[in-house]
Amino acid sequence: MGKYHGAPINKPRCGAGALVRISLPKRAAAGLAGILALLATSQHPAMASSSFDKAYANWMEADRFAPVDYGFGPSVRPPAGRTTSRQTAGDPVPNGGANAASAGVFGAPFAWPIVAIHAALLPDGRVMSFGTDATGSHTGTLVYDVWSPSGGADPAAHLVLPNTTSTDIFCSAQSLLWRTGELLIADGNERTASEQNAAQQQVSVFSPTSNLLHATTPTNFARWYASLIALPNGAEILLGGRLSKGHAVTTPEIYTPGQGWRLLPGAASDAAFNYDNDDWYYPHAFMAADGSLVQIGNDALFSLHTDGQGSVTTLPTPIPMGLHAFPTVYFATGKILALREGAQAVVVDINGATPVVTKLAALSQQRRFANATVLADGTVAITGGGRVPNALVDVAYRAELFNPATQSFTLGASAAKPRLYHSTALLLPDATLITAGGGAPGPVRNLNAEIYYPPYLFAKDGSGTPAVRPVLLSATANLLPGQTLTATLGSANQISRLTFVRFGAATHAQNLDQRFFDLAFSQAGQTLTATLPANANILQPGYYMLFAFNGAGVPSLAKTVLVTN
Picture 1 (cartoon, rainbow, N blue to C red):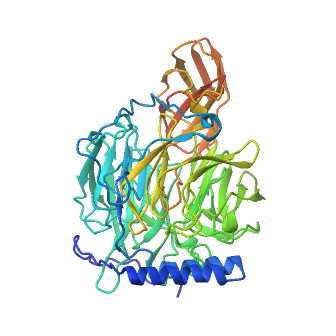
Picture 2: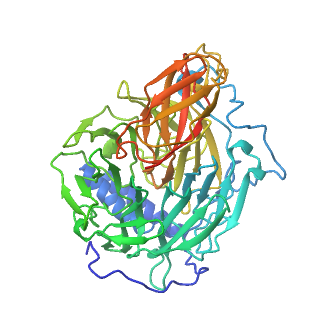
């Protein structure tokens, strides 16, 4: 067990409407009790986490009963015709109280049409999310939602559409294609007569211009829980995933728009995509300056090369034990924040020939299935999670903020809803953070979302009033790495900082599309100029948000810049 040795498969799918529903509260309760007992009695943290996750994995995806929360409490439906004054593209920010400038503020929860298991920021600033039907069930007949942030909590801000590709994209992989501006969605779930959660190899593309999904060339291997990572040439590499229980897919493959998929047999690796160690589960890999990918596994680091037939090697750098349930995020040039077992965190520096791992002070608590998102100023906001992956046990309601300058964590504001397994978080162009989803299955099916307003949006005088933003009128829309960016301010405010944040695509505690850069710049009156990094492996082509900060550290609304290659 532990790997798939066969040739690429092409197997028929079950009907799009097929569903195996397990609604057994007693069984679920017994399973949870057993898991908690494992966690409590084990004397070794790594063994406890391993035993815990293996037991939990046997039932965590069963589509079982859980109350629905539309944002007003479990089983309470939103009032008919409810709207909100929030918001027009980043303004107004609510009054946050005395701690807003240090902790930020969560806005009131509001209804979301589905459980947002997957969420991606589109080139036009909207958010596309998918993962369940309108009841929060992960059936084979999913719908998807396109949300306009300028509409806030108003139901009219959502465009909910049926998935007409007949492909179950539950627990698939997604990444934004910069050459076309479309969202690539690879593989996902398949229900068979013997297994509720098998893999499939269908591939869909979402077009923001038409708001429609269409099918494209399928993958060589059927995969469930795989990762898509963007490459500088516009291609995407698909890593990991499992074929069925006990069988990981160990051979990566690359998608090139207009050409389809090709395998990398030289990069097949039982170690890098190990089944028993859960390294097949949404592998966390990041592009290094030399064009290789550094994969952060649960107990080792790997270097993967995509040229020719591909290759993979195990790196000598040790790293504390991790789990698939912990997020990693690229927060500065060549630097990755990775949460690990036992409320630990490390920074993995991939700028040199060999990665360097630096252990940080502990987080406030264990955060399984949290989300880690780089904010407009480079701070990493860790939201949601808990000691138990998908139960209301030691839930982390407070945001935890990682400061790259001090390499330390501080606690932020508290959310109202538990964001556990199947939750998502994305940075928006107004410099706020949308947190959504959780459930399907879960203790609650969160058909709701919350907006987190980070500390940089508030006055520093303790009043909690929204800070005055600088105004960014325009920016160069399309650039190559190494070229000069020009931006125009709405007034001659002195700008203290210019940041560049790659659009995100989040699911299952990972957001591999995000990258963050501070840009050196000069200002002449209302004109800003900055030269982009020249290495396309570092400044990966794609869609970026450009933020200008005033002297008080307050960001503008973002302008979108497309970096091509």
